[in-house]
Length: 139
Length: 139
DNA sequence: GTGATTGCAAATCTTTTGCACTAAA
DNA sequence: TTTAGTGCAAAAGATTTGCAATCAC
Image 1 (cartoon, chains in turn green, blue, brown, orange):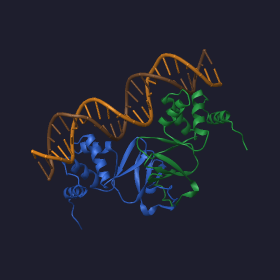
Image 2: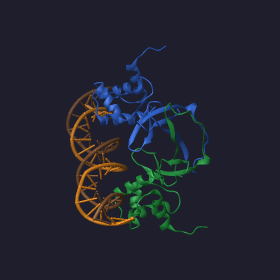
Image 3: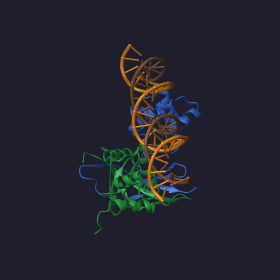
Image 4: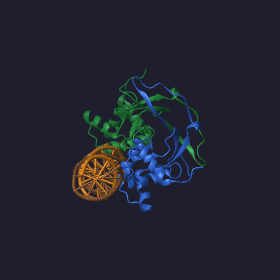
């Protein structure tokens, strides 16, 4: 049973990704990866950082989100044109998208299977398969 | 074998949708629905209209695309945050998304099947299931 | 020190909006 | 007429960029 070591966990992640562990990146990494799976927009993460008295500019939040995504620490989920969501769960899985409130919910990889996948067009290869189940209702 | 009647076809579509057949909507409907299935952005459609010497403002293109979508004549496909695609194919089907050039390609409904669909979260109902297969490569 | 990173403000891009003008019924 | 629809230009929202100041190594 590993004990909580939020500091070194974030530090190790950044080091492993080859990203310099700056104060801002450490703060954002802690917000993102301490606790369970999360789906955030840049705006939300920025607000959360400010609430936690972490001084980070919105531009830096955007930078960090993209750097984390390139490093494989985050995955971008496209469900809405005009807003980018980032998912801390990078394993193979899909999403429910609650149209009513714009919230995302993970669907574990083994709970949804695509039976027949058509072959990719000639000359191309599959990069990723995204399944979005749009649901409505109050929940 | 029905003959080509692009004018009345567009007219009938608009009438059926309860949309006043204005010069602009008729022009856009012809561009969209004469010929096969198409995937366009507002910007692309606007450009195409100008190329065909049809005078339409970009704002009107946006209006028309959303009205057509509400009327069930178009379907919006979300594959990229920051750009909205509209699909003239409103039947049940999915998409290949060519990452390299941002092009969409239809996957007929019967060529892709989702085997196990998890039940929607309590209190919600499924509005739509979207499958996007992102492919890379020159094609 | 030196090069990477940050913050800020301005710029960019897509989409929406307000409102006077035009056109369909 | 009367009301819906259009065009324009401005506004709005999300994201990016340029660059001087700051920080990690």
